[in-house]
Length: 249
Image (cartoon, rainbow, N blue to C red; front, side, top):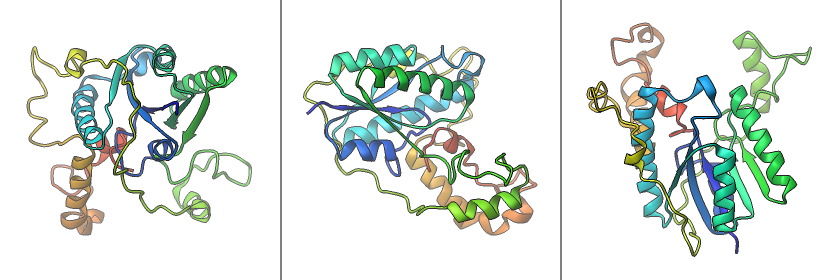
């Protein structure tokens, strides 16, 4: 059976990952992360985010390996890299979870159109939002600008938000394509190592995100209403970078 490419982007987790879950049900899976510094233009990933990305990819790779899969790392324009992987693996489908930045929408739309014209099946999923932008609008068919009326409307459209567990096993193809070495990407600062103070504070990766959420719920949530105005204290969730990279839904 031809494998399915699962293109990880800002969804670096195995649990509650609809693109991965759908692929696992269908056949062999080739998980891939593409470091595309060309398509974003001025919005390409910055230095601190690259430090986080290195450690998050390392954690994701280890989690995939425990379930029988290998994370394939490639660098370059996403459309070209996907073409290369389709040729190398004979995959007939690509799955990804949607992004919402304008440049990402334009890139993904172009890739999807090109692939479908060649007969490649493309499926995209919502892995990040309670409601996608086009599903909740005002009576004038525009976006809400005030939270309370938005929430009243959005609450009527909420689906079951129960997180799906990570797959216990991920079927692998007979032949695994070549992968870049993560260290060769040089995402970590060295001269100077201005990120040396990050590690004692942050733990990138899905396990780190879950631990951070549990800490917030147990130790800080009760005082959040008043404490959120004191960022010097441990009153906020500090989930922002975990959410950005999709390590938790």
